[in-house]
Amino acid sequence: MKWEKARAVFLAQPGNQICRRCQAHGLLNAGNLRPNGSLQTNPKRMHLVVDHIVPHKQDQKLSWDHANWQPLCPDHHDITKQQKEHGKVRSGTGLDGRPLDPAHPWNQRPA
Image 1 (tube, rainbow, N blue to C red):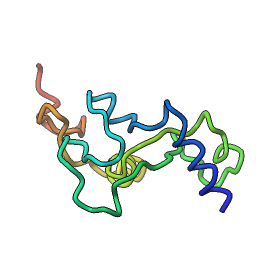
Image 2 (image 1 turned 120 degrees about the vertical axis):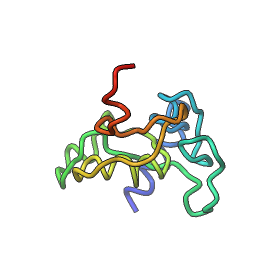
Image 3 (image 1 turned 180 degrees about the horizontal axis):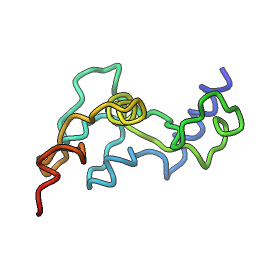
Image 4 (image 1 turned 90 degrees about the vertical axis):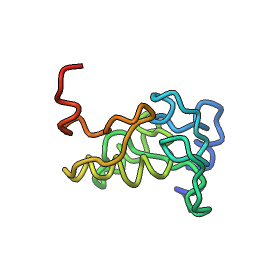
């Protein structure tokens, strides 16, 4: 219950109503879009998630540090960030169509 209340208060703040990773790619996503700009079709994924920038790994002080929180869309939180944290290759493409994974061969070519 404590987390749900803290999450709601955080996401209600004006600076926390857009996915930070989508915004970095030029997309203003309040949780209703996928990172490629298409509409999210799963109603259970039409929201923002409070993400811990630095994984807290059960460290309660880090877990509750609001400076360590950021709003993310479910795709960036559940797919992109989790794959990175667990050492897996990130899938998908950015708005420009290029692979998001910096280790992808396409991203190893000189621009």
